[in-house]
Length: 168
Image (tube, rainbow, N blue to C red):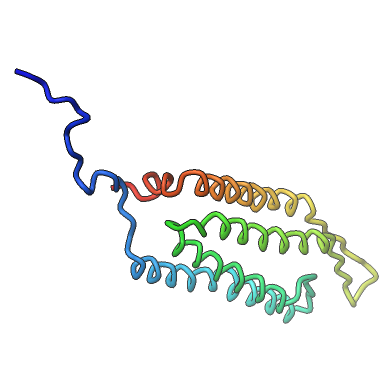
């Protein structure tokens, strides 16, 4: 009985593909559904809240237009990030989403002290949410650096992360 060396056994053509990437049509469909959900969460609900506050004569430091632009940009980038996850564009899209979110939170940080003057009395209420915004800024910061690491990893060894992202 002679053992055949492992190096002489031919590998099947499918042996290298140890992952199962969904088709582009599937990713576009799921990305579109996710995009609609993101638009509802990032545009429709905040704009409705801002309009509700405006109806109560409570002005908010961020305009409705700024919220709509931010929400649409991030919703589109998040949907595109899902669709392009198996490609090398995933890391740069992670960085773009993080940068857009960071800029919006920086805008909130700039307006994080909110003064509410009541017309009936001489009482002014000052509310600051600077600490909350600073904590929220950690999320896009870490996401940006994760995108940098993913971009470097994809440049060094393309396709290596796909085995973990899309197991068989």
